[in-house]
Length: 255
Image 1 (spheres, helix red, strand yellow):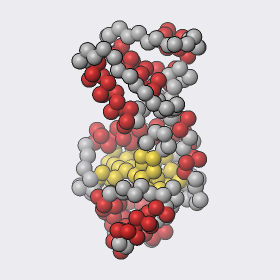
Image 2 (cartoon, rainbow, N blue to C red):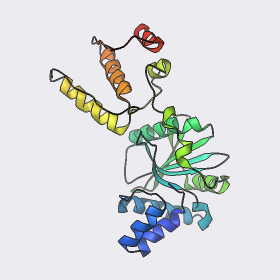
Image 3 (cartoon, rainbow, N blue to C red):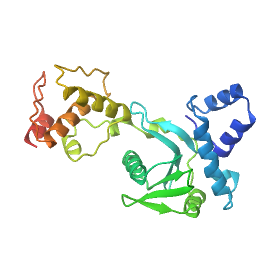
Image 4 (tube, one colour):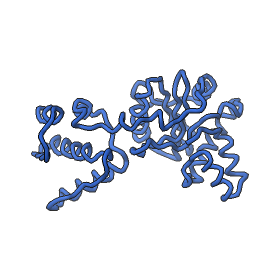
């Protein structure tokens, strides 16, 4: 995926035919299923910022709708700078609880980059801006966001897939038992869906459920996460491994 000027993106949607717009976004590696509603949200954000006084260059080098490989964790708008990273999420409407949950997840995924990160959410229905500050959700002003956009020392020609190494996020309970026990991980949307489905079937006394997937897709993490949730409910859980136990598994047994 390539970074782009989001004003140009919105203008292209307005000015080009559907066929040519699809060709345009493919050139930047954007999801061809990019919805009109998402572009409308971006357009409203731009309008609010332009009303405060901006130049087109202040909207340069944003990655739009990027998903981390193998994880499917998506960021609406991301921009990288040598001094900090800027993340802006866009919602038509939402609750503060859901906004905070998403921004906390974003902060988790971005902390591996070892650069200060500013996480914002813009809710278009009410034109409200929120930010994550010291782990808490607080209301923010558009002037603050604009100031950050102007002051960021933008990094150009960023290879975003190189920046996000899936190894940092695919926590293995066996390889990183302390991270697992300290809840320093998040399930992907797909894993969460599988978890809900599996746990609903288990409560219906199905005899067995098979969980299949390729290497590195998080089967072990999901299995242990379900086990940990049942144990937190006071239930007895047994995990049988078809190979000799290693140090990580012994630590998990102890804890």
